[in-house]
Image 1 (spheres, rainbow, N blue to C red):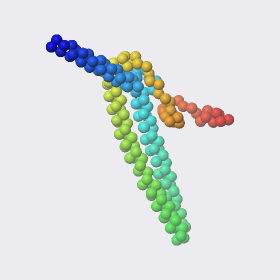
Image 2 (image 1 turned 120 degrees about the horizontal axis):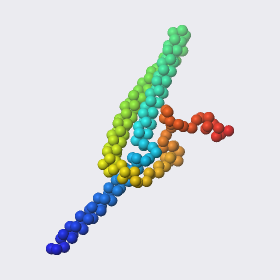
Image 3 (image 1 turned 90 degrees about the horizontal axis):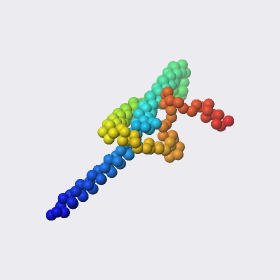
Image 4 (image 1 turned 90 degrees about the vertical axis):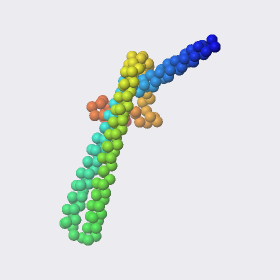
Length: 180
């Protein structure tokens, strides 16, 4: 019966050590994505890139729709002036194709909605991670080394992506100069 307290003490000690090791792993994992000394805020960078996708998609869609509308108007004008049955049939086909372009451009709205949901989720995760950093202690995480992130995924695409508006980037002239 005297051994019972020692067994309980040993079990409690083992669980405390296990809990400590688990907390250290959590700190390390959090530091990988939310290190106070990291040069890049990955969550905000992702949200910015996704917002840039939405904007670029919207701009491209507007350009496509404006060009299709202008083409439709030109074809309609030609159709009214060129009164040849065989040509009128082709004009109608061009107008039908332009209408298909308009219908296909609705992808942009759906894409924007879905990406907005992803950005909201990323913001929620970022807030949760920030709370965990506060709970665990910013200094405790700052004491860990900053994880080195490979600049490329599969050796081709820079993880930080194309420069966003206002960010410094390599100019096209600099790239062209490399090939001269």
